Structure formats: structure tokens, C-alpha cells
Length: 265
Image (cartoon, rainbow, N blue to C red; front, top):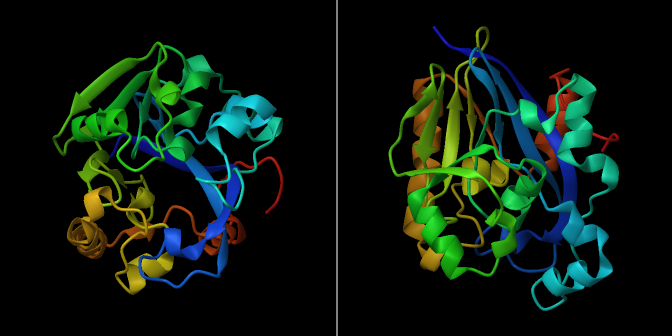
């Protein structure tokens, strides 16, 4: 019996960048429009967020934006995020405030997944121990140290375990050292596997293509994680959701899945 009640995908912004950053080996020249997503998971024991998007303050302030999203690291520009895209504003539509979030599970600590922690001071944060170490080394340049320097209750481990019945961590390293996906059992319908950035796009899964950004160039780890995600999804007859796929987001909306977004996209 699962303790999960529902899952709500949340659009917190978008980012344009070359497809080679999502698809390893892809020639440069094709620009992706990628949704930046978080997920609210309602359980019998409380509310959980999987990822929290970007830090709005680093985008709203010209000085901070220039310092963090300069053209050397971000030739296609910074992510697009408005005041209305902030997680507290979106969650308020459901009558939920930042203090109503009981736990946050971070797939990894890159800026577009951990930046929004500033909105949830004091929350319990679940993070893979290897990810914490890699983030403090800034292993690939996509970590902003101030994103995870606030007053939080961190919980570090390396185990694959259940946070509650029907909600369990799955280690999927490769894109980053301690990347985690989530396996979610719903009270009705098929389970969901949130791939996180182990698979940005359906193409990563269908063609078994590693992400473009890899921890220590470990393509073998990334491909093993993709294959394991597919195997788990098949064994559990689960939907396998990529993380930065615009077509996937639009398909969820078209299906009538409960989603949160400041505007249609």
C-alpha cells in the first residue's frame, strides 16, 4: 500500500541551450527549449519536493546574473524565470506555503535543481553524500556554492531506500557523482519513475544516449543508469519521465495531468 497521494509537476522556468549539452556526441547547432521542473509529491506523512529550480535572486539582479551566468559558461544566456515562476508563488495556488514543505529530495545540486533552496529555509534536505562532495569541488562548473549554503537540515546518505511507502530513492550516477532519481507508486494508475537529469530527453532513453555533461567523463556510469531506469520502469510497468523535455511537459498538460505553471508554454 502506497503512502503517496498525488504528484504535481511544476514549471519553474525555462532555459535555451545547445542540444549537445543534453545529448552526448550531438553536433552543435540545434538549440533546445528546456523546461526547468520541480515536483510536488503529496504523501500521507507530508509534502515532498523533488528539486526546487533556480535561485530567482541570481536572475533578477543584474549584478548577480552577470556574476553567475556570464557568456563564458552560458553562451546561450541565463535561464528565463519571472517572479511568478518562483515556487512559493506557484505553490500558493494550492494553499501551500514554504513552511508546509516537509522534505526536499535533490536529484543533484546543479544550479537549476538546487537554486530554489533559498525559498525553503529550515527544510529537511535529502542529498546523496557523493553529490555533496562533488558540489563542493564544483566538479563541472554548474554548481553555485551559495545555492546550498543556507540554514537547512541536511540528510546525507548513499543508500537506496524509501522515504515513505511508495516513494524511494534510486541512485543514477553519471551526469553527476551522486545523482538520484525517484520511484513513485501512486494510489491508482501506473507508477512513475522521475529520471531527473539522468535523462533530459526521451531521446536519451530511447536511443540510450548519455547526457552531454558527465561527472569525470564517466559515460559508462551514465549509460548504466539509463539502462537501469528503463529496466526498473519495465519491471514495474511504470511511466519513465525525462526531466528537460518540452514535448513531455506539453504531453502531460494535454493529458490533463495536474500541473502548476505561471503561464502556458
